[in-house]
Length: 539
Image 1 (cartoon, rainbow, N blue to C red):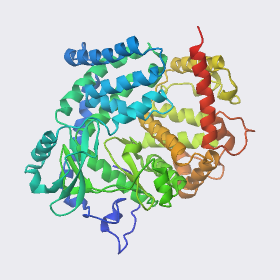
Image 2: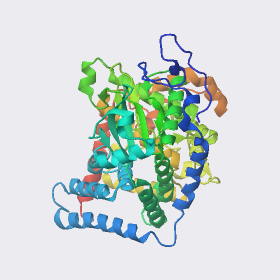
Image 3: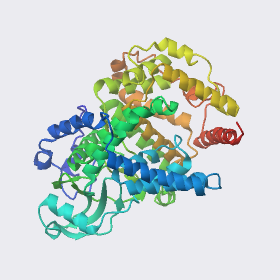
């Protein structure tokens, strides 16, 4: 549950549950916590689900052979056919990405979910792979309607027609764990119904055991894999996907985030109301909201929606939840967001939710504050507290060894060989210090990468330096005294260090005080082009 915060006072002309959460003003029903019978025992349920994770991710002596063989064969055929027919030809990377996406689809829910995580890795994974795997977000082959009907009727304990006056057989979206259908209740409300795929729970647990067996064997073989910390990735994956197998936990995540979004007072994000009664382990009925797709810039422009303001509000909302209240939506992407006609964002799919205990919340807070004030040692200390470095790491030695106390190098002025050498050197040194990517940081960074990519669509000419200054000013004005007290800072001495912010973009102090996203994208393209050209040279 999120930290306590002052409630928003109710208004006489608004639904009473807006005091509780960031819901719409047109309420099909009112959320009253004490009347949500499906919430009973959820704390114990969440504890039991989390207690199962260590057993699932502890490597067994041998993997589950049947499933392991099936996965190996499916992926092997995809890569083998590509190797024989398409490797080295024009469009080769697009071809292997397409074959892998189809293989993931055949392998089912666990690998579809893994593909969805990859699809949020703009800048980390090849562009072709990210683009292809984005199709796994909501274009996965759906289950038959007979199976959907059976799951709904089994979980609700009555015929479909006893609950719904209408139920669309073709889903609005089909993803890894579930698919979503439009429906109308017999009482007249328009709803969406999230229905879990049959047999998914058993298959997920088999796949997790196979992944847990493989993950430790990747450490030390591929440097980047060691930094990515495959065992921690599998553990994070297990924590999120096992909780997603019970929609009552997702509905509780929704309520917790709704509460935080309401109590910040910003009110720029809306979440759908869960139904008071129609929530079970495999069925989740919610209020139906509608609006613009998150990338429909033309439609929003015609409606007079300020896309720059929309992006800014989304960033502040995300940071506020994580840094101040210790909870955030853990899977932001275009399929989980749309924009209401009044310009507010609607947030969907709460299966993956980041929850920070007090120590980790303060570490995240210190990491972000250190990045804007130039406190390099504070940032490293925060990363250590998050688990990126061992507890006994000599932070001063890391600063000296990685050259963090020296002027930043502009990567666009470096040759391809210099870039590769620099990356290899940094990777080797980080591994020497036992560096790993912490689980919570993975979710946070993935969301920040989505917001980075959204900037290209919604506000390509946005001045990033000016926007960072704006967001810093908001937090300073709204939470400055609290942040200073929590981190032990002098409120008067804590100011934005624009040179430190420039350094995070690889810019020298004299680079100027504006930097548009378009300029950042050009810099990235220069680096990518150099690296690609180097890869084509004979070695």
